[in-house]
Length: 212
Image (cartoon, one colour):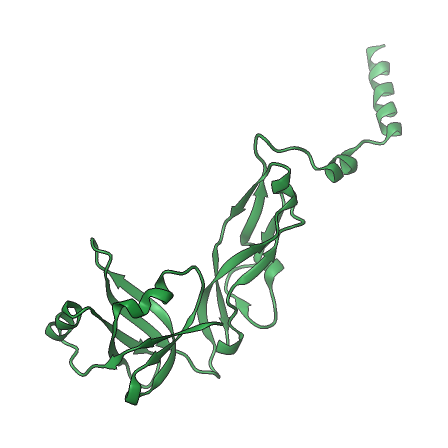
């Protein structure tokens, strides 16, 4: 998985006054959990741009200079209720030999056959929670939808791989192709749905006998 770096400075004062002073200076108070003890630090708000304003998932390297570097994932972001200001950020420290859980975006590949026939692609889950060692975390989960006809669905069970575990039941629908008013029948579906001539003749004979 791709990683971004957030430079910051470790902070000793964690009271309300210190926090307010940081925000007034354009800095975001942050905490890293998951290690031996919480690590409090601050970083410039602009340092979060590539982490927040993207549909992609990232791990984070928090660079505190002489106080060390820490691999982590974003855990929680607190925003101002009115202004578009980041007020606080929580991170969870990750280790190479420990499993971690995070949300990963789902990306569709190709154009569904059913969509070409007028159907509508519905993405029920744009992100899925996965569990893996940090080295095995995927940037995204690809779903090839090219062969999907109207009425077809892709379930979580169709996406299982050995590298990571998807933390959802097998029966969860991820994407589906729904019909619409403008949809047309698929040629293959027509062929599969044709009734054999002998069967049609038998049905007609039964009707004639009934009428008589």
